[in-house]
Image 1 (cartoon, rainbow, N blue to C red):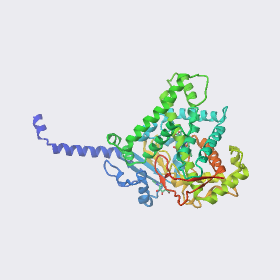
Image 2 (image 1 turned 60 degrees about the vertical axis):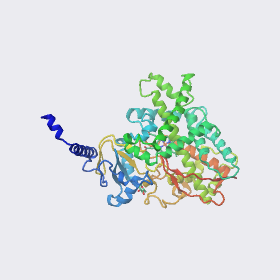
Image 3 (image 1 turned 180 degrees about the vertical axis):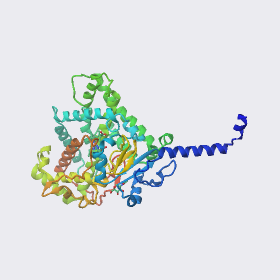
Image 4 (image 1 turned 180 degrees about the horizontal axis):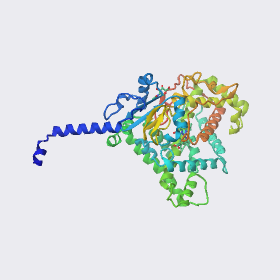
Length: 497
Ligand code: HEM
Ligand SMILES: *[C@@H]1O[C@H](CO)[C@@H](O)[C@H](O)[C@H]1NC(C)=O
């Protein structure tokens, strides 16, 4: 009897059953609470992927906002991309609400497939809960100690400024792409913190590593990478950008691992010269049984190395570009440098408070440069109500920082490069809507270091050079998407002053 029944069920029936089952399962999985933020029509399986702009894959949601912004009021809306459910918030009021007022509820980082590959969910950028809290506290206090240590961080950065100025001088005022020299200089600061040494700009292995990292971070914006984020278990079998990312990540990890292994060889537990030493001490303290483990050290080192190199150097590349495009602003910065510091003495951090104009220019570079336009994604720790909308646990949050740093109601001329945004009666004025480091409990832990680097590198370069477009060339502000959004490669002339 059973046998007979089985025979009579045709393949078609089975297929129909299977499809219905998949659709129902998909529907259950993506079912939203009644008061979920407004979202466009949802297609089975692909969710809102159909809205994706394939020529601009990092901006799937951009189109969404343009299309639905008016209908939804644009403050908060939902979108599903493959297996992840996102909520996007816009404007200072809303961004503050989720990152500060309700920051505790949005403290987690999502396990995004590609970011998981790069950052491994163990370090600073993408771990959660107890592990994250302990490592963040440890990193903050360790970095603070190095600032006050025998050889202060300020001197270390000043030394690197001299190398960078020399390297720009070597170009003999010919057009050149400053990208990897800046990258190397900035990277040397975190390298000296993490590994205890810097790398020569001529060091080919290190230059290769920097190029590899740059490629990797840019490839994050590729279509295959976005598809991998949405459907990792299928896309992993296909060739494409994500495969290059896997390969590069392995190379980068082995670079860091080699450094750690070498250190362990002749390690003296009573010495603490750098981040690795301090972390090894923590591991020894609780016999590697607590949160401090070698795997996590590796992840923290990689995170600091990546986050500390790319962000600051991208910002400096924007700064030189803006200076070359606004000679009158560049001239005012140089006049301030000449008055306060002169042409001989090296810029020091103490000079900053006497240089409101230069400081305002750096702020404006960060505002307009807007290198991390959607912040780093967060995730709800539990079901949360925002502005009357219900956001379930494990929903990814993107805070649209662009909507804050370009808000028409906050800035006099949001679309223009205008240092006046940060000046009042000739003094620097802080603005609440200046949020390049994000805000709240997991905002950038190294903002102080980054701002120190930006000030010292920027003033050191403008003290010695005037930046100009190469003859017969017009510079432009086109950007390249990736983990950070930097200027497209450009050539520039550094004319000695
Ligand atoms: C111009 C320079 C920089 C900018 C614009 C920047 C911006 C950011 C932003 C927007 C976040 C995400 C915060 C959030 O989720 O709300 C972040 C996190 C982070 N940044 Fe920075 N950053 C810069 C420089 C640096 C430097 C120099 C380092 C290290 C040496 C660094 C290390 C980190 C780390 C470790 C995190 C993860 C923090 C966590 O998840 O707890 N950043 N940064
Ligand atoms: C983010 O903000 C900018 C500026 O207000 C806006 O043009 C863009 O559409 C917003 N993106 C999203 C996804 O809301």
